[in-house]
Length: 125
Figure 1 (spheres, rainbow, N blue to C red):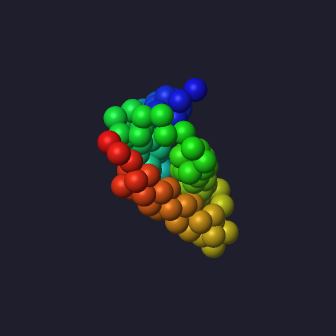
Figure 2 (figure 1 turned 90 degrees about the vertical axis):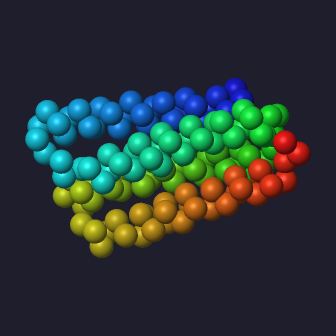
């Protein structure tokens, strides 16, 4: 499976999860997870979708080690961030316990963006 398709499918999975959480919050009138909801949709769906477009339009056939590493780094970091935020804003785990996970996830998302920028700069497209 190509990386553009992998990013697209992961992005759509995040869109489903984010919209599901949004519907739950609206139905329950409990919006305590709105920060997690926003991150699911932005970091999970939107960024993954943008990466899918970049791969489809500018990085056609670029499936090397850096591209594969960048894919898994972003997906693992986004998932860790989303789970951490759900646990934090859901009141399940204290902030002091989650700070290292959320910090590492945030920096990892940034590194994934930097890797994408580097791949685009190096591309011939």
